[in-house]
Length: 422
Image 1 (cartoon, rainbow, N blue to C red):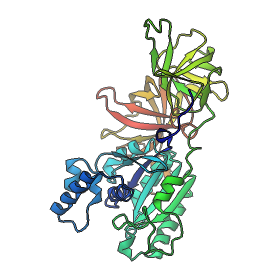
Image 2 (image 1 turned 60 degrees about the vertical axis):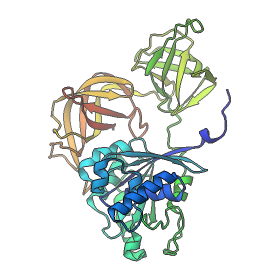
Image 3 (image 1 turned 90 degrees about the vertical axis):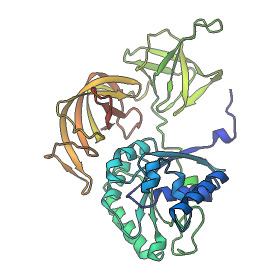
Image 4 (image 1 turned 180 degrees about the vertical axis):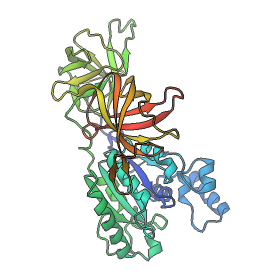
């Protein structure tokens, strides 16, 4: 079946917002939705009435994303709010994440699948500790593109000096981080300057608007298209009259591409076979690429189950039980040295032991602290773990899917940490 053109084939950009409290993240997203005509009339009426009730001079566009009652009452974002909109060029999924330090884990959740992070900085306050924390987490999560939005320029008389100071401060920091693409845009989310439309108040800024960057930044090379990785999530055996002998392996392609006739290896068994078909519901494809979800059938009858992985012949993943991981700790209970946790990695689950805490990161100085081994909520640290069974993994900077994992408390079943394999 050939690829159909049209709306469904438009490129999808996932982006997340980050910044300190009251930097205007929710207002910026409201402005993007409003100026790109992505709001229904009844939504607009509702937030106009809510703004009036609250006694706001302008329409409070932040109400478009702050859906929880407590968020509206306090005027803050607590949980990750996902919003979807589209322009003629691209589709977008936005994760509006909280600025408060106690919700750092929500920021990590929203950023984990993003192509881009918008980091907001209040032009009056400059670079704060939370700005550094979010820049570091964006770097840790290997988000390919970062746009620093210097917001509230209307409150500093659209001063170029304020903008340049923040840009210089952050350029010093970003040189220490592994971020490939950082852009800076001076904006006013409240007034709409340089968000969708160019600002008449900042003729000193000759760069693109935020919307232009969102629509045009190149994201085609963000996914690893070289290394084929297919974690098996489910074995499809309909055993129906039409498909009496069908045996397919369903899952999402984590990276790379695959075609009918390609040779693949099954891990952990090490057996090889050839791709017989690539199916999606009633359609059959000649080839598929990450991040498509498909069902694959093989020429040979090999024992494969959930948690196994199909990989290409070139650059196979590492296989091992001793793994070094950078973690962001989510839980109120501290990490337990030599503690045992459940680990989830792609479609497999195992148990693991924390062998050692190697160091903790000081988010403010971006330096390692090898002496302080106490890992508390929102801390970032490097640990060594041993798993009860071998994992098939890549380093996180090579593959964000096979290089990531989560740790779960066995007693409470809570997710306590997210991890990036070093």
